[in-house]
Amino acid sequence: MTKCGFIALIGAPNAGKSTLLNRLTGAKLSIVTPKAQTTRARVLGILVRGPAQIIFIDTPGIFKPKRRLDRAMVAAAWDGAAEADLALLLVDAKAGLSEAVRDIVVRLATTGRKMALVLNKVDLLDRHRLLPLTQDLAALAEFEQVFMVSAQTGDGLEVLLDYCAAKLPESPFLYPEDELTDLPDRLLAAEVVREQIFLQTRDEVPYGATVETENFRVKKTGATRIDAVIYVTKASHKAILIGAKGARIKEIGMRARRELGSLLECEVELFLRVNERPGWDEEAARIRATGLSDPKK
Figure 1 (cartoon, one colour):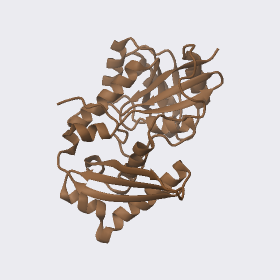
Figure 2 (cartoon, rainbow, N blue to C red):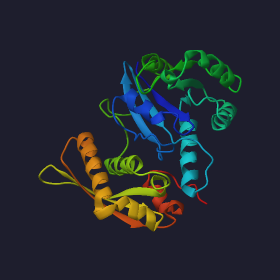
Figure 3 (spheres, helix red, strand yellow):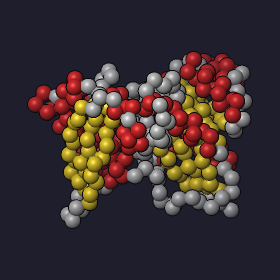
């Protein structure tokens, strides 16, 4: 009998959810940067392990929202937890029990949802600090099991996967066995460009930018042409993204094109333009274009 179900990855920004998803599935499904709040929309990662199809839901990090976009991100995270068969609470073990983590644990505890605790980045600290952290978290909520892993190195993930597969209900597979994600190629292209904006700019620039794929077409030559627009909130952000004589936007395009060629397994022709659009992060259409549901004002 086959098994299938949804497992949500929940946590504060920068807990390592996207890195964990990519490591578990063996593919780059979610963009990863050293900066917090990189993931905006919910991403599914699909993995077959024996008779089980595990569908991981990578959710945005939960934080105190300010913008309409922020509210949509946080709502997506809690919706992902609500619809899952099991929630995995990811905690950055090195950062410890922050106020943000405490708030998430307390709210999760009120839902009555089955959940396990995953202490991530355990390779970055002394092991003797893990027991007190586990005890502090266990005092706030009931966890079925505790796992100590490193999404970066892969340590502890086999045991975690065995647990996840065992917790799923009996069900036919919901996706073809060779499918890795439900992320459309157009959204994947936009996310890869946005990842480069995070990696190549700093301060508030990447948080004030969004990317939309305007055209995605496979040509007769077999190459894929992608036209994307980057919206920014300020003229100064546009100037930074373009760079001196267009150097920055060329570098963003070159690296994104290389990454997309690897992911799509074809030649990619990528064309980028930057538009100033103040208040895009309060526009329902722009929020929906990122793959999020509009939470209203």
